[in-house]
Length: 257
Image 1 (tube, one colour):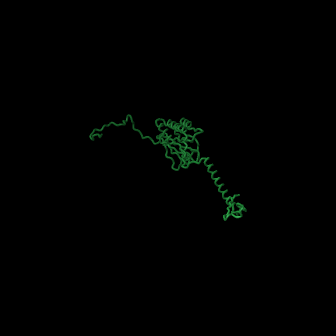
Image 2 (cartoon, rainbow, N blue to C red):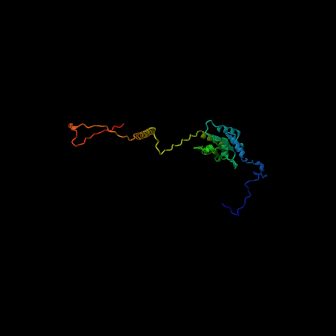
Image 3 (cartoon, rainbow, N blue to C red):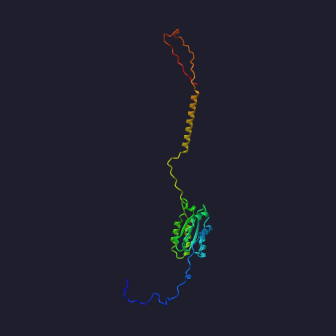
């Protein structure tokens, strides 16, 4: 709604002098300076220290830091080394800093992860996985676990309580992750040969080869030989010296040796 132009102006002010006495503007020193951004050397020191919790900017109190160390203490059978870095606000990370390379340099084949937790906005926390943790067949779902923990933490008013609740939720969810299911066996198109059928096939092949060798050797050793017929004189028929003009037949049987 627009006031009419000729409406009388009131001399009342929203800031009367008796309630808001005029004074000099506040000096720049009265406002706290924003925290300095984290350097690559500080980030590498937090990773190489091996501590489960790091607070380079004193973002939480000493009591809260002790509770975070207790909540993030790894168990001997933990599948992942979890590093928690608390900051007042999410800083601009150095452009030359590579978190994956730093984790790989300090932990090598052991899976490790770095969580950069922002106290003012837990839902904007960052997760970095080492190559050993990211290249697994079933990678750790840390981004999903951290998002679920941040969804609960934003309901609290105290930044310290948010940090403790998030750390406890993530560590508990990570410790209770079910083991990954084994990969399904790949169905083979060729039917596997049974041992009995394989033995029968080998025996039949050996018998066939032996029979062929025996037949070949027998053919080579049986060279053609002359056949000698024995002298078999024919007996006279009815005491006659001849056979009435008909020939006599003699049959021989060849006996092989």
